[in-house]
Image 1 (tube, rainbow, N blue to C red):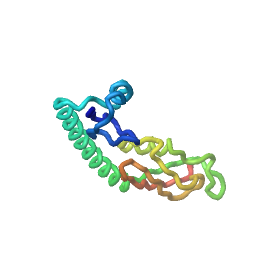
Image 2: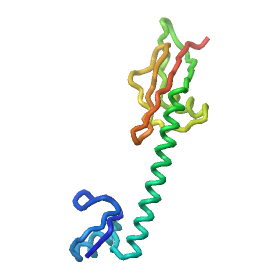
Image 3: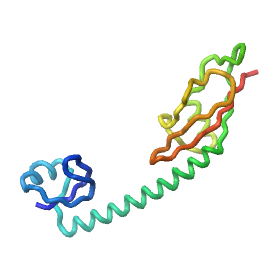
Length: 148
């Protein structure tokens, strides 16, 4: 029986592939779980359209991520926090604080995308990487100063 995979399955193949499998396997396992559908002319045409639309959407997403990465490279944030002697902060700069600072500048990033290499608990200048996905990233400059 010919089927079209709706999603990637390690033992069979990738999403959108047309495969020949045993009829019982298709009818009793793959189709009821929603992992595949029967390969008719209508289903094949519909799947091709869905794949084209998905590729176009991913291309737009990649363009947006690339542009966001370039904007983040230009971005500089300043934090004024309470500090003790020798510039030691009472606390540290957190990824949530960085996300909020980026949001104030008009960009949206997820807290999990922020990668802080070392704990920021001293006054000074730092760089923080923002991993946007699809191989794109940005680097935000931080300036931490003591509150007066």
